[in-house]
Picture (cartoon, rainbow, N blue to C red):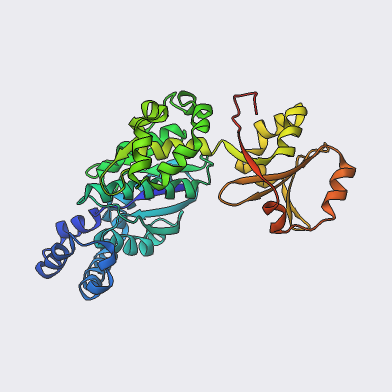
Length: 374
């Protein structure tokens, strides 16, 4: 199970409850308003804080899990699930959050053997002093969570115990939309709260319609900084329908806001790129259409049935002749499909090269488990 854990500063607050060290306290206060890119130039003070806290953690012995809200919540979650956890620590763009992450990365596996730290990641621009930067940071956080998930959510947990409270509404929507659980623990108690999934999913989003506006969404994903393009956007039907997903500012005139990015990423997870020939075959072959709709788009099924054959990634469905040739880059590119074994074997004699992808024109198709049309 992968558990994405936001990092806060409760580690330091708990240290100061037990220790009246004015020097370390002053170092902490000096670092409070500093961004993560100032980490190295403050290394001397950082190292002294780190040494003091590491000694304190050792003194806590059997109660070490109480050192921070993040550690306490991870211990509780591991006990409730009774399984090993792959922990992804996500820190804000601050010196103190990065420092907390460095300390916790080292001590969590010792305190909670069931937890293996897979990653400590600083989320650029995620801070609360600048509103514009916060929006950028929130977008970076959303993309990082989607990257960790690989668009497969059945083994994902989001732990919102630590980190900024301002991120909680966005993370809640992201988790509910992707049907993954959220956990939270109250710092002053041992009560672990699991926020249940409600009947709230991609069904309330018209991904077919979003697909028809894919170019507009892609432009806004990068940001529109041209006044002429911005004026065209404001006069468009797209803007009338989706202005609530757009953040408008002077620097970048318009871009998707965090909710817009959550929804766009969700709809992208239901799309693949295919050649015209592949699309025609899917339309004509009901078994092939069903294979794409029910199995191929699901990451765990697709990877379990994929083999590398002569450099090609080939999805082999098993006891039938259906084969899918694809490449995973920024998206899934399907460049050949077969329902005849002799044709498949003949094609397989040609080794894979990037030229195979480059020579094709790809079109986007939307695939959702609950729909029949592909």
